[in-house]
View: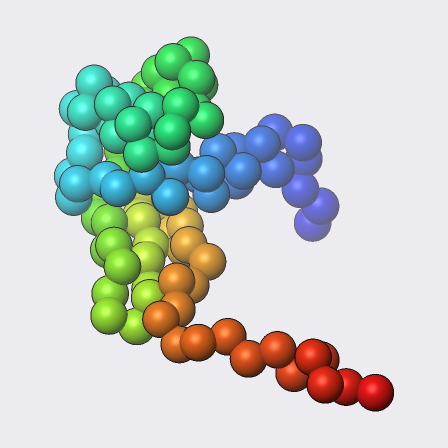
Length: 102
């Protein structure tokens, strides 16, 4: 089954929104819009945030555990759930294995 452009777009929106610090149960549209705009350094336009908030609720958001895990569970108007996971924020020093490679 191949994904449509619309599905790719929706997944990109959910991915970007997962980087906002959202409070659990952020079902109030204004709260969700504010979080998307503030936490994204205005990368989310007012229109984009408004349209997102009209279609999705943040059901649960787990932010920055000690091991660097963050994820948000969203629900759309059709009661379809999507789990969006951040890239891991690690406090472990990075080791460049290629630095001394020949």
